[in-house]
Image (cartoon, rainbow, N blue to C red; front, side, top):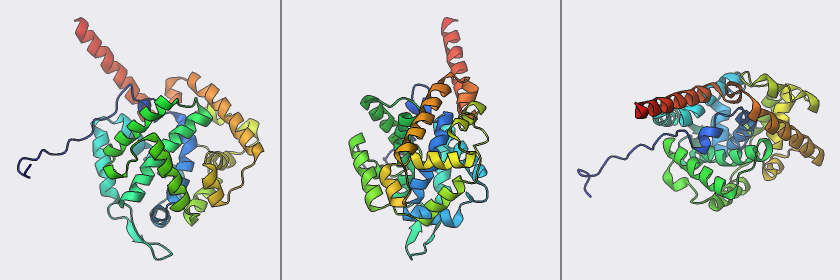
Length: 294
């Protein structure tokens, strides 16, 4: 096929009701896993250098988180806006480049680190279900992973970077942890920052109230949950202690969260953009049904 007759590449279809990500991406429990996601991401030397040099996570942690959550929810609940957001993120990262403290050059749009940031989402989703919900069945994991790949296309992650299957993904993930991630100063800085901030401003009161029985201040619970939900190999690489008693406390917190969140009103269970998108989708569905009856 010549260039003159080649068809332009079609944009991926946006997500909608029925997708696992539609149900999970806006759930408030996601807030409990984001710290661990950032830690694992900045353990990649290129990402650690870029974030350490240019991010405002130290001076404005909740402002940065709010902006990240707005972008993240747009990917799943934004409809056509999700495609534009994927383009915007690529454009925003194109000038993020430099040389780290060890003389290694980095660029935010290099395929490996750009894909790693995205692909940590699957591990985080599986971990969230394991600790704070109900674990996925193998079939659900396959479906979720297919959706993560589709989301990667929306975010314009190079296609060659996607492991083909769930099993391939876990081989890729463990290889990244073993051979690429490092005990990066930015990861330790992120963990120190977690100790000094309170609970997320948008977290509903019933979830904040669960910290008390564990005897943890809000900053310590951020650190505790972040460390506890990291894969053991990541904790070992970072030199983070974690005891059997810690695991029991995390499991106890997880059971309390899993028992509480499903019974919250939808407005409290979901983040604002997700909640409004779900309302709009239901209204659209009612309108379609009404037109069919008419």
